[in-house]
Length: 183
Image (cartoon, rainbow, N blue to C red; front, side, top):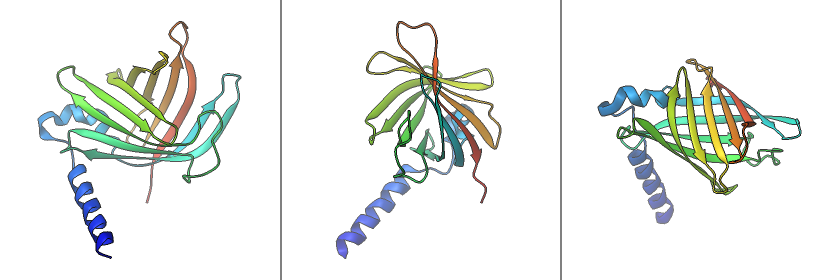
């Protein structure tokens, strides 16, 4: 019983040390690029096969302030519930993104971790007009572009695209329509 209480106490301490109540005042305006997503979201995910097939599944996304309010972290769970049968094309996601604003480059350093699928991505994110565009490269040299578009206070459209290094065109792999969770 003591071990269980100690583990519970450690988790509480960890959560308290990780989470923050809001953006750090030092860069509060810049932090709102992703900070506006803080909260819980219901999502409809569409995976697009290279042969034109499509598969749709529900999911959920949760954003929160972390690291003294200097970063935004999220958890993406697709499909919902976690542990559901494999989602065709895109696979099941249970991963997290850490988004850290870097004032030295006036952009965001982004790391995605999905240990269940062994997918790890590094990107740089910046506003582009009304959208947010994150760009990076996979271990195999394929370019990635993840975009938040059609952003409102209660919804956004997220596009996950890839392009082989030698190709001219981007290929849509996944798109997500998210709505802020009510209740």
